[in-house]
Length: 115
Length: 115
Image (tube, rainbow over the protein chains, first blue to last red):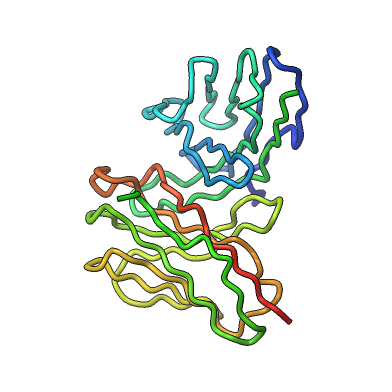
């Protein structure tokens, strides 16, 4: 089936504006993850969903970041009052979420630029 | 000790040679390990997963796991220029008790295969 999709692919916003990033996981995948990758840096975990619940929000860098997932499918990552340091590629991944199957598959990412 | 360590490279090999990429991890109870390939400007792509000690082969790729020494490696036989990418090692974070809903990624090794 189709892979993980993300939108928009690119987003340029002015400092202080809010942005919403969307992720549509692989059909049937119950687990969904958000990561961030800054230029030349490694992948940074942000938040994880199992179904609609987020048991681990430990990677969210500040209270300006929030995420939700509805219907056990689409997830939205919202960044309020964006700052220049928020500029990065935001990656979403999904996995089947079943015991013994933990492979995560990534979407193409959203490149966020805060000017 | 960092959770996941990789030599950042760059690792340069001639076409047709064997490329060897290494990764060490800190959590002794980690149960599963993953190798991702990331082309420049693209998102990570899962290429290998390994759960048991020993070797796992898939085409030109072989993953090797040694839990006692806490390292996992990826061998690429008959390297091709199209293999030129950054290779990321991913393991569950320390003290996760082996549950691996969240992956910690190494910073990756940049591989260049020269024609």
